[in-house]
Length: 376
Ligand SMILES: NC(=O)C1=CN([C@@H]2O[C@H](COP(=O)(O)OP(=O)(O)OC[C@H]3O[C@@H](n4cnc5c(N)ncnc54)[C@H](O)[C@@H]3O)[C@@H](O)[C@H]2O)C=CC1
Ligand SMILES: O=C(CO)COP(=O)(O)O
Image 1: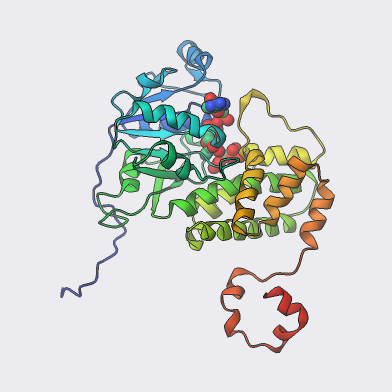
Image 2 (image 1 turned 90 degrees about the horizontal axis):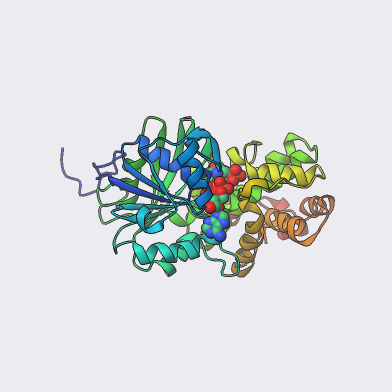
């Protein structure tokens, strides 16, 4: 074949080397499921759990109270000692609720040798600072290689070995997305198995914005379900919610198309339509006029993130009316009916594609005062 001088974009990984020893930092439901995933993929795995009581329970019953339905195999070393968990680790998997990541990242940084990469699995934006999780880690763990793992993945289903696909994102290395030096590829082969299938991305911003915002959308979707509303409003909410993710991603330097992938549309479809989701269930209770059950210390990221995502969007001048409605209901005491009415009576708008192509649209109806307002 003649050499055309063009690089060929293959879709296979060029044998990246897996990390042999994995420390999962954060032993809630998702950290526990990811420790099981690394163990099943053949990695030497340690799991750090903050609560001594949970470690004691695992030692006596084999089960973590954060994920009680699934036994933790003996070879997974479980500890509340962070130094012991990180000793000899080649990869640290950080699975800490978004509002607590900064404090734990600072502690990990003090113990982890330079150059050992981290993969961030929290879904959220930090309150006050408005920082993405990658920014929090860049500040607390300067110069450390980092990737983001996100996507439609209920911990309980991963633990029970249901087929699951996620996205792992990191800036592409010198040899591109599929090169052996791409951190996302190395993490993918570290965790992949017949039932856990990572896809690669070089858009960490788009992936993490998707994961953070979908929790707020799931609260909104739950509210609609709990209110007894139909399928039309839910579909409208999800489609417009994806548009909100896309706008915020682009404003932060991510790519609009990432929203169509596993971390965006995939996780929105999962979380916004299932009572397995803590965020959906929280919203459902609100919608039905019940007090949400937040027992057992399980994190409902959409609550804090309704506020933090909205604050970030406002700072960037990005409109996110659905996230704003959730914030006003959850934090500012606005009635659900008034929030829904405000969403439905806002100015008419164009869909993203129409906006993109507005310059080439020449239909006379577009010069009416209303159309001018829509396309402004
Ligand atoms: N559970 C799931 O199915 C999935 C969860 N995630 C994300 O993973 C992250 C962790 O969630 P889960 O594992 O589900 O947690 P969880 O709700 O099962 O457990 C709560 C976790 O928060 C930790 N925690 C509470 N206060 C803390 C503090 N002050 N400092 C440090 N840690 C503290 C607890 O130790 C425990 O690990 C969240 O960002 C969540 O959105 C992502 C994908 C799936
Ligand atoms: O992020 C999740 C699945 O991808 C879990 O969602 P919940 O936190 O709403 O349960």
